[in-house]
Structure formats: C-alpha cells, structure tokens
Image (spheres, rainbow, N blue to C red):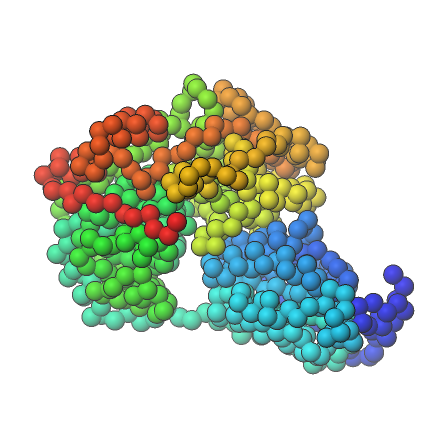
Amino acid sequence: MAKNVIQFGFDTKVANKREVGTIKAGVATVKLLESWGIKHLYGIPGGSINSLMDALYEEQEHIDYVQVRHEEVGAMAAAMHAKMTGEIGVCFGSAGPGGTHLMNGLYDAREDHVPVLALVGQFGTAGMNWDTFQEINENPIFADVSVYNRTVMTAEQLPHVVDEAIRQAYAKHGVAVVQIPVNLGWVNIPSDSWYSAAHSHRKFPNPTLDPEDIALAANILNEAERPVIFAGIGTRGKSKVVIDLCRKIKAPLANTGISWDNFPSDFEALLGSPNRVSTKPSVEVFPEADVVVFVGNNYPFAEVSKIFKNVKKFIQIDIDPSKLGKRHYTDVAILGDAGDALKAIYDKVDEKPETGWWRANLANVANWNEYVHRLETKTEGELQLYQVYNQINRVSEEDAIYSIDVGDVTQTSIRHLHMNPQQMWRTSALFATMGIGLPGAIAAKLDFPGRQVWNLAGDGGFNMVMQDLATQVQYKLPIINVVFANKQYGFIKDEQEDTNKGFLGVQFQDTDYKKLAESMGAVGYTVTEISQLKDVFDSAIRDIAEGRVVVIDAKISNERPLPAELLELDPRLSPEEDIAEFKRRYEAEDLKPFSYFLEREGLEPHIGKIEQGGF
C-alpha cells in the first residue's frame, strides 16, 4: 500500500516523517517487550494492528513474530508458554474478530492464573466512536477476563501503558489487555519519553511461617490414624519434601491432575487424582481418611463432590491468603510456601512405624497399577488407547514435554503416562478448553527447542485447531502429534451416559489425519492394530530427529475408560450383578475394592462414595 493512503482513520504519510531524537511509538513498544525478555508474539496481522506489524518488522532481528492460523491458537499458545516457563505470554489480534478470537486462550490464562498480555488493534483515533469498519467498544469485552484493561489515548502513552500492563499481569497473575488505535504506533515520540520497568520486577518473598501453626499441624499429624497428603501445583518443584513427609508419617499421597508431573509415577504411595479426572486409589481414600493435609491446592470439585465430608481434621497450606479456608473448614491454616511449610512440619512431626493404613494404601495402589499395566501391554484384540500410551512411554525422553488436550486424553494421560519430575505435563486446567494441546506444543518447542515435545489430543480437540499443524511445519518444529481418533467426544459422551436419555452431538465422521498431515508438509502415520505401534513410533522418533513434524493417527476403539468416580466394586455398595458387569465392561476382573485391603489389615472400612457433583 502506498504510504500516502489514508487507512483506518490515519494518514500514514504524516506518520512516516521521522524527526531527530524521536522513535516511533510502536517501535518503542516492541523494544519495551524485548526489555522484558519476551521472545515470541503470536497473532495474525490486520489493518487495525499494522503499526505493530511495522514495528515488529523493524525489530525482527530481536523478537520473533509467530504467524498462527487462528488467533485463538495464538492466545492458547501464549497461555501455555506462561504455564511452562512462568514468564508472560504475548498474543495479539486486530480490531473486531481478531481480538474476540483471542478470548478462549485469555480465559484459559485467567482461570489458571498465569500472566498473559493481549495487544488488540483498534481503528485509528480519527475514526473511533463513528461506528466505522470493525470499530467496536473493546473495553467492556475484555473487562471480565483481565486484571488490567486499557485503551491507549496518545502515542506517548503507548509504551507506558504496555509496561504497566506487563507489571500488572505479573503482579496479579492474570491477563492484561491493551487496545491500540492503529495510528498511534506510527507516531514519532521523543526517544527519551519512555522507559522499561523490567529491571525493577521483583517477586514477593515467601511469607514467614507462624511456628504455632506448624506445631498445631504436627500435633494433629502425630495423632492421626489415617492421614492423607493432597498436593496441588503449589508443590511443584518440591516433590522430595512431600514424599519424605509421606513416608515419615505414613500418609499416602493424592495429587491434583495438574500436578501429576511433580511426582515420580513409581512412588509406591502415589494415589493419583480423585473425582472426575481420576484414579481408583485416590477416589477411594478420602471417605476413609481422618486427616488431610491440603497443600498448594485449589481443588475445584471439593464442595460439589463433598470429598472431605468424613474428614475429622483439615490442615491447609497455601502461599495465597485468599485460598485459605476456600474449599473446606480448616483446623490449621498455614500461610507460606508449600516447601517451606512441609519442611518445617517434617522437622517437628514424629516418625511413625509402618501402619496398617499405609500398607493397605500401598496394596491398593499396586493393585491399580497392575490393572493399568495389563491394559497397556495387551498384544491382542482391538487397538485401544492404552497400548498407544505404552509406546509413548517406551520412546519418551527423560525430560519430555507433554501438551495435553482436554477430554478423555486428560484423564487417560494421568493414568497411563509414566512420568518423572524432569518431565512436563500441561493442559487447560480449570477452564478446560478443548484444542489446547496443539498450541501448547508449539509454545513448548519454541521455548525448549532441545527437548522432545508431544501433543496428545483426542480427535474432537484436534479437529478444533488442526489448521495450525501448518504452523508447526512452517516454523520447522519437530513435534509428535498423537491423535486418539474414535470419532466421538468421548468424555462428553460418557457424561451423557450418566445423565441423559441418549447420545446427541457427541459422534462425528472420521478424518484421515495422515493425509491431512501430508497435505501440510508433515509426516503422517495411521495405526489400526496393536502390532503396528512399535514400528510407527520408532519411525516417528527418527522423523523428529530429522526435524520433521509427525502426526500419528491412532484409530482406537471407542469404549469408555473405567470411571473411577463411579466404582462398582464393593458388595456393600453395589449388587453383585452390577459388580460383575462393571468388571466385565472395564476388563477389571482383578481389581479389588479398597475395603478389601483395609480389612486385610484389621481396619474397619467406613464405606462411602465421593459424589460426582456439578454435572
């Protein structure tokens, strides 16, 4: 376009007239982003954000613009970048639909409390408030999703407002949105009229622990007969002290699904996650427990499932005072870093000899792990998702990164990925938006180019974002995309089985993802039988070593994974015929109820269920 054309309410000929000792406001803004250590921005250009594109063009040797195929993917990639690195993610969209397309990723960031900056284009100031093309009142749209939400009014404000937005996003662990009238980025401002606060950024120090709270917690744990530690993402990076405390007080370890990568899968007392995205040992333990240590945890199903209704004493540890007492009445509330508090309790608490409670839980975990292993290592019969995970575990590297989509794959990855704390597992946790796997894999490979990256997705989630497979190819990001394809929204279908009269809207036609991959320049494989898996996964590893993008289209069966939240195993809770049908349907003939192991240790089971709650 010629430089003298008036577009989006601004004469670009005037804007490009450079003065001595000045800098374009847009260029100053991009330099400000660089000063904060921002390396990637995700988005799609448009007329209302082209001054930012001009600035990115000028600074392209210092910051990378990543061209996604949909702004939603850019926002989700920015959110996943923040979850993986702890650093702010940045995305942008033009006025109108470009900006509104960002919403899904921004809400994901809001719900998981990670810092994301969204730069949203706006019509030039001369055309604002005239109902001009794509010109809408953007502030109310982003008010709910953001901790900071401003429209820039003058060119000199632009770098200052963006600097403020970044500081607010970090300080408040959320989304900051800045709307930028397109003309302002082209205006020259004095070179000394802006500065960056990046060098001033500091994190709050850990709160000082109250010794009385630690002593109270230790006393309760000394008297506890059936303690459980329930760890959330606040324990990330502190797995050793958690496990040490478990072994000292003989308390099994439950963890939220989103903290799954924090603990080694082979820890003998690892129960897994309760309720909806669940494992059997964790579902069964809480009705039997008398004391819970709820640490770094904001478990969102606590109230609706009444998971703690049988618990006698509740100890909570959190670094955020607003979380204390949020999910259950607390007998002891400890404000502090999870690692610091657990270490203090460990030093104060008595070591317990091996107990029947401890042995019963270890036996229950072992029984569950044997069941899971048997499914994964089947060599005959219809291809199931379990055998696919067996191959992923076989070829995964010690520091692999898993970007996990939402649905059955969320639940089954928790059950069937054999992980260690060097690895990384991320998804859309509280917002639970489908389609997060592929964008997260893009962010992971850009952020950690030397590590093996997986996108694990059902075909429902993959269908939502599969156009951005082309982004992986364009930027030469060797990622293995595994599509668990069974022509259905499996998790939603399972919900309809429990609550509805029939199935509607949960099944769809098949897609040949191998051909799709090849059409975009990736390597594609189709797997229909268990016997094909080893060769395909070996080939995939060779392909990514050569820098290729890989898609594995695993045509799996469509049966429901065992619903651990709806167990039919205990004859005191379910009729014998229901138990027999449950075991037959889920290949669970050797699974035993937790009560079996408790009684074997001479302990009386309380016999109770956690309610599903909310759905």
